Image (tube, rainbow, N blue to C red; front, side, top):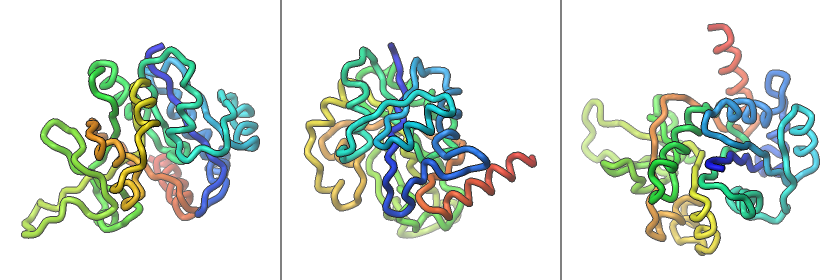
Length: 246
């Protein structure tokens, strides 16, 4: 098998418990993620990695494929590793369960890249920020890259900082937390201790950079809205209603 998509699905959330099961236009949030991911052309298989019977039941009821995983995982990456450890697969795509607007082309872009560049361990997605208020927002992670599109740094701070600002210089990119990994690198990652920068920023991907591994960042034109709060859920609902009227 070339590519598997895994949606790590945790019931608990400090800011919005059970958000993956919250109603969004008649469907739970996790169903929107599943249906969008299922449209990706690269995926040979797709599975939801659950930590709670309520999520497992909901996924099975709408016709999705779900597996139960241990509750004690510290991250979605660890949960994914439990699912794929015994599988013969080249590329694993981590699809966030709280991103109901995820576009299938994002999945295809990162998967295709790793299949065609097997020396690269990780690929992820960015989007140019179009709304000024997102730049200082610590909940919107920013990313800067080199000329080859490799990540230089991820931060909750507005990077790059433009000291002598001129018209057109406020160009920032937000990180969309969808990742593709080679299966081999997942085992490498598992054995890397949490890094200093990761602890400072509370950003797991900095562990990869701080240990010297490259991350390819691919730009998308598609907007996403992650559901971290009930307010986010309402933003997604409004966005989908507006799109339906177009």
